Image (cartoon, rainbow, N blue to C red; front, side, top):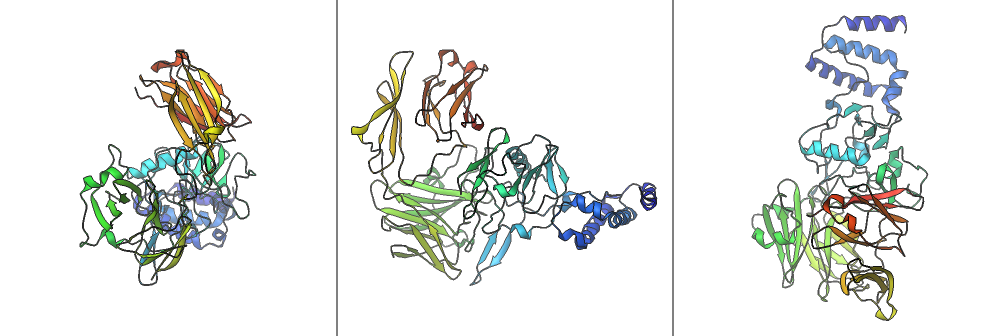
Length: 550
């Protein structure tokens, strides 16, 4: 320690106890000065900057102490965090507003590059990314800033949103915990309440400390890939555009349909059945009839907070799209539709203010009324183009019109894939056959009755191997009896674990599994509790609990 260092520290030790308000004011002044220093323009960690600029920071520390607070130069407070909303579904930093042509407003998440300098959230050693997100979301939902046991630490390197440090502690970006879009630069937000299940998370190039940084899961030229967190924190490649969609926001997010007092409302009991509202969830507050034709009714339903649903009711059949209003139109429009009961294809959608017309790629054009539209395009429609004062943009829409519409196996080519003789007599089997029109059908027979069936179609996405795709067929007493399922090619084995510690490892046959649970595990105390899938190297891919419904 130099003589100057020793004298400065001695002066600081003789100062009185710090005043909280003075400390906060001095901290803000110090950070303001620090941001003007030449060394902060480099995207290097704050601690290395402290080592390079010790005289400057020691002087700043003395200035803080003189102002009434002895503050360590590397200290951070919650006042250094960006301001944000007050709910777990809000953006984790306040949104920005753009004014589009025609004076229409677009509220969007901030761009990652627009975020201010901020500390990271430091979680205890061994915390997984999903666990950190769960704790942070829960704290936010309760109006808290930091989860219990979490400290503030130096900022993450530029572009990173999560990092596992050498000491095993996990650092998380408080303003962009779910990553950011490399396409638009906008911070990712969730369209639903985060419940702790493994989800599509930040891309590989936003991660440090991944098991295999050279894995093809990381982005390559011309393609984008998300990753998931598997069992024991292993990073897994996953399909594009899953639970977190890139926020693109090409148009206005204003919805005058919600504020127009002249529009009729619909009794809530007439639409609640078409919205995914579970027991105990907040109930809807208002349902606005945006458009009614001879074929369809389009309704916008609002809920407490920022949640809303877009509902389409056609011939007593209802469908809906729901989510947080802040991200609901992140693609510029919310689309749904398809073919119902053999009728024509119908596409309906909700768009923001400033869009006046929609054109299908077959040339058909319809107007937008009260932020909604509906049209019946040709079977081969693949893209919709939206136009209005705010500009023009287009979105893909795949109706699967050229794929099989129902379970239509070619019975002339049917074969048994797996057969199981049941303990109580009878037989269970999985049978497969090509699907007429392409793809494959499979179904499960139990004593001659079809217990489950499904068909794949051309263009269907591949099965995910970072989720457990199998399930149980249960007995009357609700204890799991038969386990069956179809798994992705990457899954080499499936393990059933029981409450008494026993396990059973199964090997898929052409991707299928059918297994009768042993009699000793047919009681609630010894029942199946978890299912885990493994790859060919024996590494766990995904795990799920087996709920008991007794």
